[in-house]
Length: 262
Image (cartoon, rainbow, N blue to C red; front, side, top):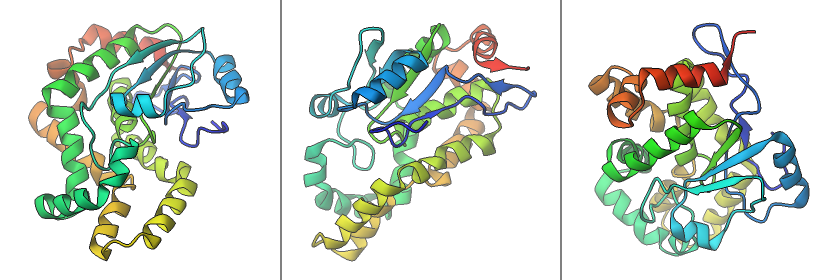
């Protein structure tokens, strides 16, 4: 979707499923924040039929960069994380403390890749995030219109929700990971300027490398937690059933609503 002010917004429609189907277009959208959207973008989202917005950000992010909303859309705030998290949340105060945080990440995790994998694991296996993931999936299962979920950049939290939904709809794991890593392409302009900024900020090289890595959407960030899920539950679908309250009837309902075989 080419929308002004929304560089990482895309419709899951068109993704193939392993049983020969295709996800229906115009029903499931992942995105970055909807902050200060121009009127033309709001009109495009309204015309597209977006009737439900799921905001996955923490309260500070919502206060600093509130969503642009319209009357026809129902808004739900479902923060997957409870507190500021380096590399994931994008509130202004976090930017000021990233140098300090990068030192902690280097000490505790060794590098940014290990840290990001652990943050994804935390979202999928910690009790508070799971409670909100459960609510998010329930809204997607029960939605009758077009539903849009978003975080700040549309990469991490939105990517995890997309992975769960795509898995339940029967999308092949390789395609799920391809969709996840597309965020770097959609955010390439922002990544360029962030990278440029890091090169002029007076911080040590090893910390700069950590900060740059945290902007990435590397396959292993998603693949390692998925492997953990499969080791414990057998599949993402079984994880959703065991931990997020999804039933076989819910999976059938999802596929009936969001997959076409035409």
